[in-house]
Image (cartoon, rainbow, N blue to C red; front, side, top):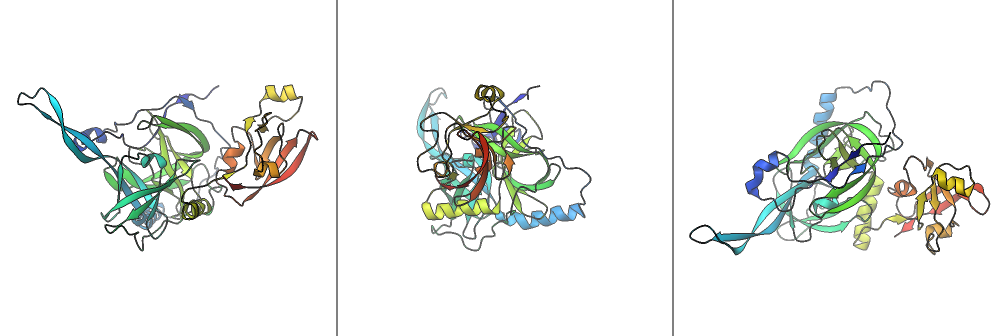
Length: 393
């Protein structure tokens, strides 16, 4: 039975709202859905047994107290055209512009000098200005430094009134890895609910892992394929984009990014690890942009029909397509000896199956990482072990 088609939206407020629509904000209006897309279940781990939680209430309070100073609200403002009427109130004509709040989101400090991580769709409007508001009500200017080319992430630098970076901010701590996360784990999130109620604390459970969705932003009419997501039972509202997803050890393990339209308790977060975020920050400081690791191949998912035509017993994997540019010259794939017709069946110990692709597996890897591949080689018609060193794109 096919998965039902579900509509997903990025949880950022629509670009043309003004403060006169605060009632509409509270009703959760202001977002439209994107094109239909199916949710793919990928390598779901089901947690069995009852976890030992200790004093859960104390844990939640402790985590909220520790994380709150690191979480910021992001206010989006734009110049809005104003109009005036004639004495009879019938004819409108432009009278000037006024800067107004048109939306909001959430972010959190990842460095002591005020670098904020948030969702790309929160700060993607080049015509908008962004104000960073701390848990204590301090207001600063935010400047977008870089967008992640492979995920819905962005880095924003915070400046004071003198145009200087902030000092002595409290950055969040990140989990060393997200691989230990299991279905049923409890998580906490803190953020700017409805772009009105900053530092709202919520308590969720991990509903599923490794989800794939195609999400869209009404403000830009753009869609983006997001993979490897954490599904939670979050009742996410506009303004929740960029909420840090935190485990009971007060370690950030993800960032909220999307919800299912017309559904309750169906939210999605991008997993984050300390290594990945450190690379993003270092990449911006070094290059001025975020550069991701790449392999340098064009692939398609192996199907039973393709396998039958190739007369092979391999049932899943990523097939390097038969094209002159399928393997980029001097790319990591080329240097590792990969060729058209080869099938990657496993990477970094993870089988490529059930909609998990090589792209998903390297997403949280960084340039310089070496990954071990299991590859069915077309020339030898045998499975071989291939070492591949990731490079910057």
